[in-house]
Amino acid sequence: MALVKCSECGKEISDRAKTCIGCGAPIAAEDEARKSDEAPGTDFSPNIQSGEQPITIERTGKKWKLQILLALGTIVVGIIIIAVTGVAATASHTHVAPVGGVAFGSVVILAGLFWFVGAAIAAWWHHG
Image 1 (cartoon, helix red, strand yellow):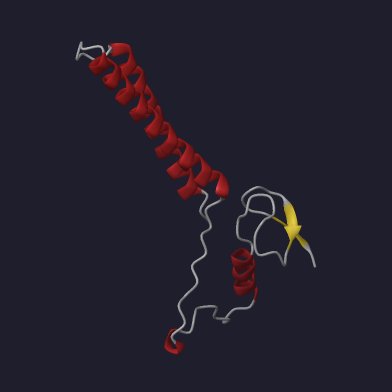
Image 2 (cartoon, one colour):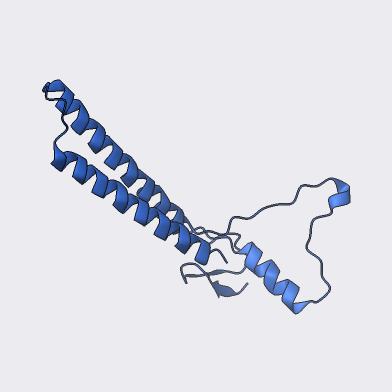
């Protein structure tokens, strides 16, 4: 049993581990890729004729998934801020939403959108 570094977080883990104990990134797929490089002609593709379904391993780390979820949460908070501002305007019978609340909600939504796009690009970049 040897220790290898996780490609996502750099933590040293067992080469027999299926996933990193630090970040949850799959390790077995990397190990199979190394074995296929070492032993040319070895085919790890699924046997389609036997009716087995291929196993898909998601290689995007949990930290990028968390960033995407937080960005989506920020967008939802911005929508809630705009909705609450509109409800407050309706309740006060002015029917005109305060510009500050709508502007702040819009800024929060834009920040969430930029965060989401950045996290999605980073997840794609670090996908493997």
